[in-house]
Length: 197
Image 1 (cartoon, one colour):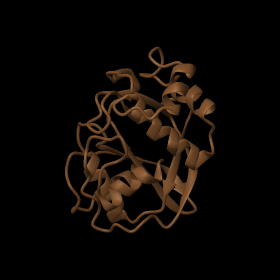
Image 2 (tube, rainbow, N blue to C red):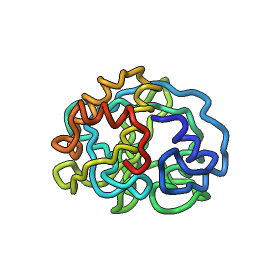
Image 3 (tube, helix red, strand yellow):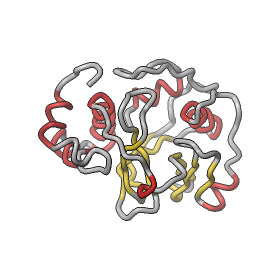
Image 4 (tube, rainbow, N blue to C red):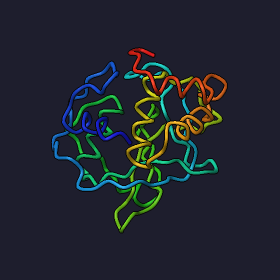
């Protein structure tokens, strides 16, 4: 959701407080539009993020509830290149989107962020994202690091106008974060800029 984070996918570079450089997209132009959205499902934290350390945010679209998100109007080529950067490859190959557009889901591989999901359309344009192929029940939960949560909090403020308290109340109760973070400890972490936290 964080526009500065998206810019690293598009133009290349390292996100603030991140530990990984991204090569960028073949087409580095900014999105033509962005709007706040809510996706069906649940946000949780699992595995180990190569960029932030700690648990990474994943989306289980089969769970009840909604996930606040941000829709960016991108080209299919840009989406392919962004997905490739998270799937462990590099930009340069267009994804075949026929299956996900037809069925709503297309596992491209067994790893993190390798399953394409299309929960519907927005103004006639398909909404596409990617997540893990497994469900929350199968996920090895792992608490996220403060620096990652600060990135997510910036995105929630930008896209949805959420206050720090509302953000802390939401993120601290997501599976993987719950039991490790409380509203108060997360509020303190969001207010700080401790590198590596």
